[in-house]
Length: 139
Image 1 (cartoon, helix red, strand yellow):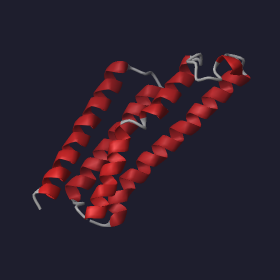
Image 2 (cartoon, one colour; image 1 turned 180 degrees about the vertical axis):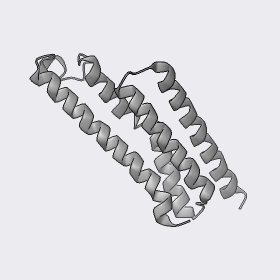
Image 3 (tube, one colour; image 1 turned 60 degrees about the horizontal axis):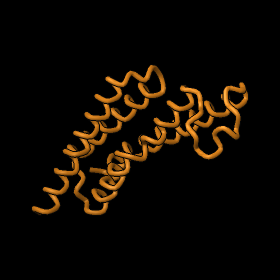
Image 4 (cartoon, one colour; image 1 turned 90 degrees about the horizontal axis):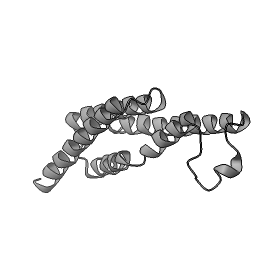
């Protein structure tokens, strides 16, 4: 499997994270500009932002939970040269699920769908880790 094929899902995940950071900053700036919140009311990370700004912030923060394990696994797969088609396909499934979860988070925030996408991503990532550990330890 080529290095580009293995790293492309990781780059898309990074792009998602950066995009959510920009969305969060934009929504926060709009909230301050529109006087929905005063800067001193949120200066120490108090959750006093309007709901749309909070949605973007929580979606952004969520990218530093499960995806951290995805980043580590991708790096390990590259270093150990254990990447295969199954890994790449599962990586894409994981990233698509992260995109869907983030989309739900920053739009309607339907917790049922958001939770389902999160859980599915967690299952996919668990399968990826178990598969890697099995291949690595039994090689």
